[in-house]
Length: 102
Image 1 (cartoon, rainbow, N blue to C red):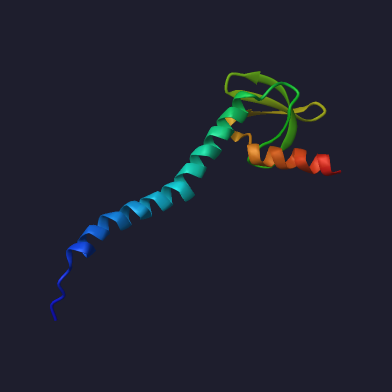
Image 2 (cartoon, one colour):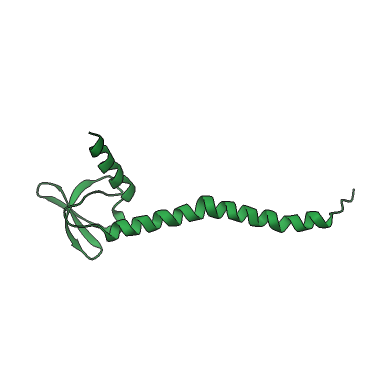
């Protein structure tokens, strides 16, 4: 059985590929880029005294910022050092939202 493609079918294939790429871009790539930009802005705005949550779930207040290294006071005299990349914007925002509800 031989199937002949029409010229409209061949012209439609590139349009389908472009549409598929547009869907992937607007639903996957663009939101990820936006989240990465928000995380970077969040890290740049960190300041001493801010209460933050690390990606590992540790909660504490920033006691010192030295370049990309952040010292967090966990409980009284207990401190830990983390890189800026290990501070989670989503978890920190969730912590603050939880405190505002209480």
